Image (cartoon, rainbow, N blue to C red; front, side, top):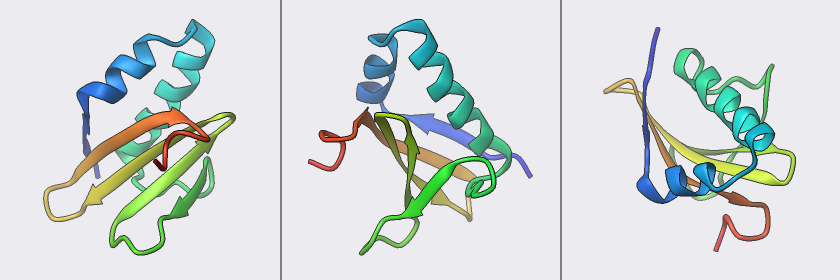
Length: 88
């Protein structure tokens, strides 16, 4: 089962501003979502409280907040940022 990944422009801009090794770590985490939308075996994932299908991935000092739309097989990446800034 393959999911389509849709990343918001602000998140793409943030990723492009990072150093190469950080950018690669985040890309790997995002591409894992393509085949497994909630890969608890491979990544540190938690469901966001008060949200229906929103999750966060913890990757070192970075956080990825995303939503799974099961009916359309779509993953919407809402925000990628540093730990202290992502939930604001």
